[in-house]
Each structure stands twice: as structure tokens, then as C-alpha cells.
Length: 321
Image (cartoon, rainbow, N blue to C red; front, side, top):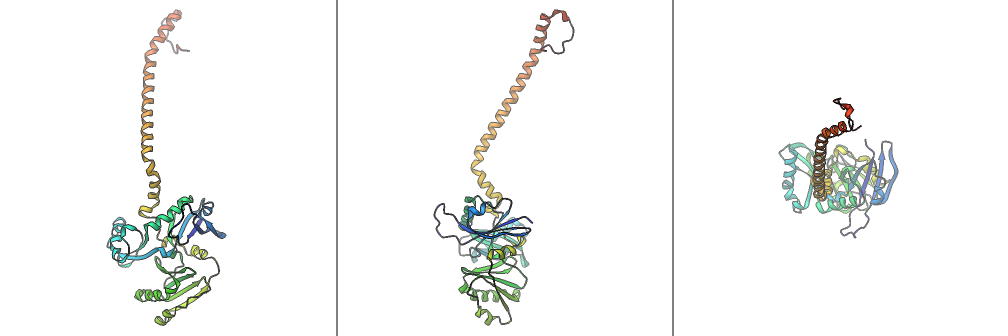
């Protein structure tokens, strides 16, 4: 396993001043365990310790919709083209404004999908680029919560709650509405209902889930008070095999590198043409000089024999010497 640098983004402000540093929390994890604990500050500070690490960026679950859709195909490219149209009726925005990242195949041709607004995605990457960071993985923090079959994990924080309901599924909501929405989610899960909901409380206001307890009396609800930084929990729960990396399609690493090179293509093409031309001219000049040297050889021998007639008809090995 590579050493990992986890960077957790907070909620981006609707309007940020130009050049404003975006503050994050970060944690370095090696094979021996976490290094130095969780740090907080501007992205530029996180960038200073990123060398040699796999950079994993955790973005707010409230900004990423995790869903699934049935697509009767095994071809990844066809699925990528079909998914936006298959989900169009469920989404409140035009599909052109959204970015779709594909996850794993499930039962009945269901494919897990992460959906995020392109403006938001571009803003994250712009902040990272401005700090000199190139992420390897960008994933909703929802999918970094612990996962266990038949158990839903709820991370309760001051700004809201994040719920992981499956290997590549979950939701994020404000704590006040969590009880109602979680009750609805369990009801809609039908045969895939959890046996347990485990609450990880990071605030002084515990989740009571009264509606859930009334609607699902057989469902076990457990709770723990978590006093460490939530990023420790997310770093431990992260599994790259179960993550839906948002760096796909237009935001893939190959495409990002292509965007950096694109403005230089004309200059590089002109430089290449110039080098080829110069190389061709150099080859032609060498060829011309070789021919000239061959033409001068008989003249050199003739002058030599005239200067040294005693040589007679003896073979001259190197008249220049």
C-alpha cells in the first residue's frame, strides 16, 4: 500500500474572493499508521507534505449524489453515455451541468453512480491546482465511512450527518431531517433493510431517531461517542476498491494533463517542425561535405606527387598526414 495523504474539503462558500486560500484538514497515513495527527490550514500547507504520497481528496457528501441505475450493457463506454439519460428524470438539473462517475455493477444490471455539479467539481480541482496539488482520487466522504454488511453507519457532526448504506451508496443530510429521511430510506430498502444502524456522534447533541425507533422497532440502533478527529475515522474506513473516483471522463487524470498541454500544442508542433527542418538541413550539409571531400581526394594526391616526385607511383595511404 502506498503512503496516503487524505485531504478533507469543507463546504465551499458560494462566492469566494479571488486568490482566497481554501482551508482543509489533512492526515498523512503510512504503513506504520497516521503521521503527526490531523492538521488544519490552507491547501498550500497540505501541498508542502504531499511529495511521495497518494493524494486522496474527500469532498462533502452533501455535494455528491450517490445513486444507481439499470443499464443493460457491459461496455463501459456505452454505459457512460447512457447513464446521464437514464437518470435525467430523477435529477433537478440539466445533465449537461452534471458530472457522472461510474462505480461497480450490482444485481439486475444496476450500476452505482456518483453525480456532482460540474461547477462544484471544477472549483475543487481549481483550488487543488492553485495549491500545486494533483489528486489521485477524489471521492465523496460518504464512501470513506466504515462499511459492514447489514449495518448502516451514521456520522453525526455539527454541520450535518453522513450515512453509508452500502459499498457504494449513502446520503448526507442536515441532522434535523435525518430521522425522517433515514426512516424513509430504510422503508425503501425493502429486502435490503439493515439489521443495525450504528451512530458515530461527534457532537454534544446525540441523534435520538425517535421516528426510526417507532417505525422499525426490530432494528437495532447503537451509538458511540467519537472524540477524535472525524478524518481519522474516514481514513481508516477508506477502501479504494469501493470508492467511486470522481476523476473520470472530462476530469480523468489523462484529460487533466491534456488540458495543461493543449495550449502548448501549436508551439510544440512548430518547434518539432523546426527541429525536423534543422535536422534535415544538417544531414544535407554533411552529405554535401562528404561529396566535396571525395572530389578533393584526387587533387590532394596530385599536388602531393608534384611536391614529392620521389614517391613515384607508390600508393599514398594518407597524403594529408
